[in-house]
Length: 386
Ligand code: GLA
Image (cartoon, rainbow, N blue to C red; front, side, top):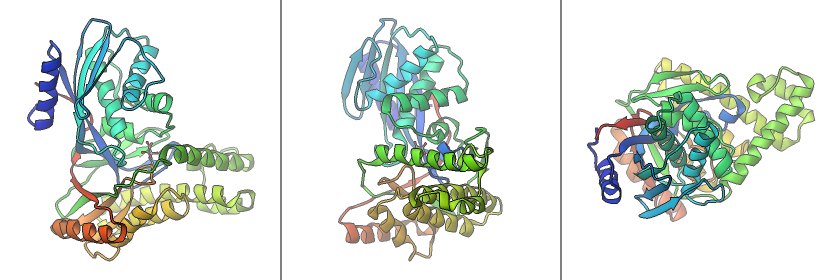
């Protein structure tokens, strides 16, 4: 149901601009509890979709033209054919349209207004929400009947081919397949997934936005991917069963250490250990051992900082500050890295104290004022009734 301000505003803007009755779609951003940079290594991740989202009002116009309006920027953009050279938010929409064209779907023109509350550049996957929500809406309007998995892979290809980031599949999976009050463990090789209840009675998830957005994020991301591939190639020479870092373990890596340069070795060590941590974290969730879960989050951060080298001083400060707070169970940087948010597991009765203390200490150390978001876990992309 449309019963919130954001959906109403997007719907009203659509009605002001266009003459038809739109489909309303909601697509969420995501958090990832643990399992960072493992998705493109065929490993495990533990994401969830959240109550920060993009709302779309979409309709077919039968005019053979695409008319988009970005509510948050108050920008309108009209075009007749797909163009891989576009910039900014248009990239993702062109990217998705291109995937439908590749599937030989005839698109008789689209009118679309979208707007949201996922902070851009903060590691909460606003781009995946844009791709997934648009793909989800087109699938309904054009009656293409693509499966959720197909939509996920189409959205991922939009990111690869149009945004130029060779991302894994986690963000798009979370935006489509999340479930309210649950996280899910995704096997990024088989794409099997299972949901784990994540009750937030005693513990809550707080995201702290460092307010740092690093220009290096996408170029370094692609470099990390290559470094992992280099590591796999070395291992594969010795053991042809190893076709991704998923197929090896810390002992085997150590055995072949002399064949690696130190950087590639560190990258591989991190990924192999992070996969083990995700499985341990799922075991901890099953046993409701949140202390253990939190300490795995800290270990994950240490690996991302020292071995995978995708953190930055501000994220490290945010994580270090929490180590003095007895009511924080775990914290780590989240997403691709080099800025964005940390994810923190905290005792729910210390919400206000956390907000106050982390703001005060982070500002004192860096001069930056962080944004804090207490998020709830939500369903993946859905259409809403008007
Ligand atoms: C980005 C990518 C994901 C994943 C994370 C790191 O969010 O889009 O596919 O690789 O970084 O875990």
